Image 1 (tube, rainbow, N blue to C red):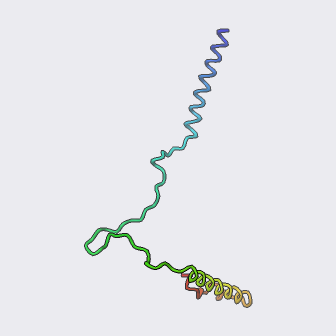
Image 2 (tube, rainbow, N blue to C red):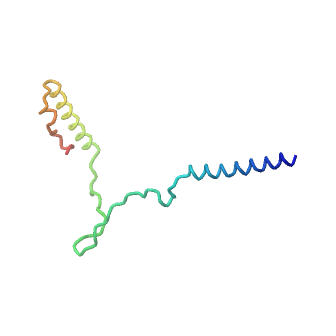
Image 3 (tube, one colour):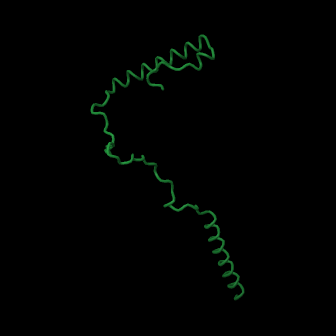
Length: 104
């Protein structure tokens, strides 16, 4: 009986050591404080001629209808470009820039 208890204690001790070693091996090496920080905008140097105030949004927001019209115009231009490429595919027409004001 004593031998059985000793074997059980040694087995439990070995299990505890194995569990600690496994926990240490699978733990993330980074600490929560070392986590990736959110990128922030760099503020310009405070000089005499620079205003440190944040940029203000435009006073009059653009109407939804105007945005929809711009998007529809852009889609029409892209569809026309795709149709012209399908009709006469050339490498020149493939690499030409779009006429849409929404694209750079």
